[in-house]
Amino acid sequence: MTQRDDGALACGQCAMIRPALCASCGSQQLKNLRLGVTRAREELEALAQRPVAEVTAEHERGDRTSDLYIGTEAVLHQVRSARAVVFLDFDQELLAPRFRAGEQAMGLLVRAARVVGGRAAGGRVVVQTRLPRHEVIDAALHADPGRLVAAERETRTALGYPPFSALAVVSGVAAPAFVDRLGSTAGIDVMGPNDGRWLVRAPDHATLAEVLAAVERPPGRLRVEVDPHRV
Image (tube, rainbow, N blue to C red; front, side, top):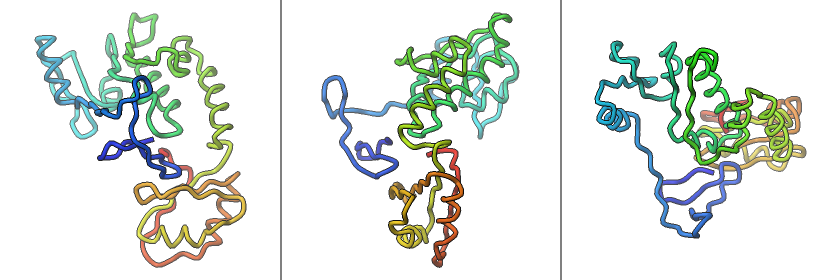
């Protein structure tokens, strides 16, 4: 699910719209709070009383004399070693609206562990979360990726996600006509649109390739992304 500008929740698969509703009190008065890297850096500098270097994909490692960094995932690529890595609000990774969110979140924790050198080197990875029993956290705490794999296998089997299916995202000016020509082809599901994108699901890659190749391509720009990294 993603939250639209009007506050409503939209399903990325079927495009169904629902009002945002608190699961605890039932209130619809919800607000999405995101601090932002620059504001977080300013507040951290005020708290630590020392310079803090900001690192993002667009903003490379700045003050190289600083030993305190804050940023996006880019900081794990640009800073080679640290005594500690802290993930603020890691729930936005655990609950990201994409089916690979779990494995991607685990990847961040693994990279962070490499940056701090592991427990033997005295390094620490601190995670701020409201979901301490999440399968990603559990797998990381036990240094056992198999725990996450087992949970992911169960979820993806139930929902029909890869590797138990094949996916393609169709977008572009010609996408509506292309999807219309797909029609009700046996063996595939077409979901959407969501932000001008349709999700096509087939039981395997052979079926997906055969179905997509059989559709006459309409005029106009068309993008078909097979095995999309983010859905």
